[in-house]
Every structure is written in structure tokens, then in C-alpha cells.
Amino acid sequence: VELSGVVLDESSILKSYTGAIRNQIISMFKFTPFKLACTATPSPNDTTEICNHSEFLDVMSRTEMLAMFFIHDGGDTSKWRLKGYGEKKFWEWVATWAVCVRTPKDLGYSDEGYVLPKLNIIEDVVESEADAYQLFYKRAETLSERREARKESQQKRVEVAKNLVEQSDDQWLVWCDLNDESHKLHELITDSVEVQGSDKDTHKTSSMLNFATGDIKCLVTKPKIAGFGMNWQNCHNMIFTGLSDSYEAYYQALRRCWRFGQTKEVNIYIIISAKEGCVKQNIERKQADAQRMTQELV
Image (cartoon, rainbow, N blue to C red; front, side):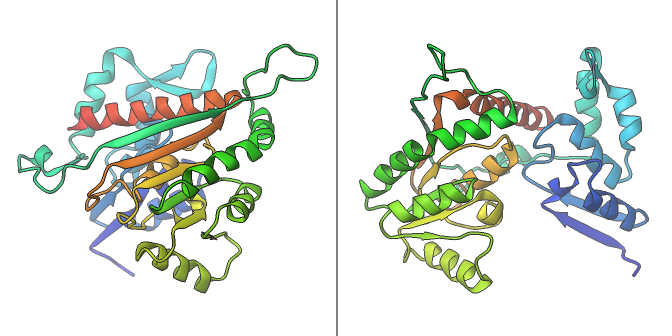
């Protein structure tokens, strides 16, 4: 089928340069003359992921862009960073084919009706036990260490979430990453509804719609299930019972409630164990990188 134009929504699907879907999309629309890619997270994990948008739009290939603006980061040949002297030129070049709009003000219009209410991010760190034969606990660094830390602190984190929800009459959206966390949260939190990947579509649909109308007090689910596309401005309290390393998943999940149309301050509670501090630091670094990219483009 020959198309004159195509719009790619949630275009962060292009982020992985080895991804089958990314390659299929770029190949399928190679000769489509008019293309528009739209996303809130164009490079959720690394600036080099902008390469894939450039290639999709036929501006410059990934290989060319890396050679022109990036350099290998030290001894790690799998990582790239912007060349120091070329950073300004890089953003000037990106601005020739991309635009970033946060509010109408970025285009010279009034912000009335588009200024979001205050966002309150509250971190709740549960205590970690010292490792065997150690005086103090060791901060989790590797993926396996993080998983073990998550398992160790699960009961404490779930109880903190339970107390937050049950001490309030407001609606709550509770995010988790592990099945065990999801089941335990639903088991302990009164009047909660759990949505998991194995549920029937009818249960998923009815639960999400009932939460949107206020008929469900607490919805327990994962960002990869309901973290994209849902409009839940009716809720202004959210809990992350743990964090993965995905900034995109965190950002998208947060935006289910903190979005245009929200009239109340939004409270985000992040519950992690003391051992998992590096996960939060990683998310914060990616958030700072994303904000910097947005500012540079604007």
C-alpha cells in the first residue's frame, strides 16, 4: 500500500536500534514522503536514541549521526556521549527537524488552562537488613542484587503502601513491577482491585473504566499494563512500591494522573529499600537528561 503520509504515535518504540519493530517501521515507511513522530519520551534511556527518530524521518542515518556528533565513552565502546565541542551544534541540528512543546507558551501563546498543579514527590525508604556476617548492608549494584533487595523488602514496602491508602478516603493508583508485589498489595489493601497481565480483557477494561469514574478506590497494576494512554485526572495520589531502571515507564505512569485536566496537587510516593538507592539515582539522572534535552530544543 502506497501512503502519502504516516503519523507514528508513542514513537519511543524506535528507541532500541536493534529492535525488530523499530527496523520494520523504518523499512516499511522508507519511501513515505510525509512523516510525523510524536512522543513524550523521544530518548527515554539515552540521547543516542534520537538517532532512530532521525533515521525514521530520513534526516540522517544512525551511523552518520553517531560519527558526526558522538564519541565512545572512555574504554566502553558500547556507550556513546556527545562530543564536548559539538554539543551546541548537535542541538541546533536536532532543532532543524524536531520541535519540543511543553505548553502553548513555547509557541508564543498563553499558558492559561495548561499550567499543571504542584507535583509532590515523597520518598519513603524502608530499612534494610545487614548482609550475613556484615555490620552494615551493602547497596545493591547489579541486577541480581537489586532483585534480591526487592524480595527482601517486599513485605515492608507493601505494608507502607497499605497504610497510606487506608488512612485516606481518596482514590489511589498503586504501581508495582513484580507479580508477588501485586498479589500482596491486593490481598492487604481493603477495597483494592488488581489488574494483571493474565486477566481477561473484560476484567482489565471494566476495572480501568470503573477507576476512571471513581467507583474503585484503589487500583493495583503495573506500568507496562496501564502506564500508557490512560486518563486518570480523577486521581491525585499515586504509589510506586518499587522502581525499575526504566525512566520511560516511571514518566509515563506518573503522567496518568499529573496531566492536563488535573485540578489538585498530585502526590507521588516512592517506596524503596535503603539498598535500592542507586535505582532512584539512575531514574533522577535520566529525568535530568530528559529535562535538559527539552530545554535545549525549546
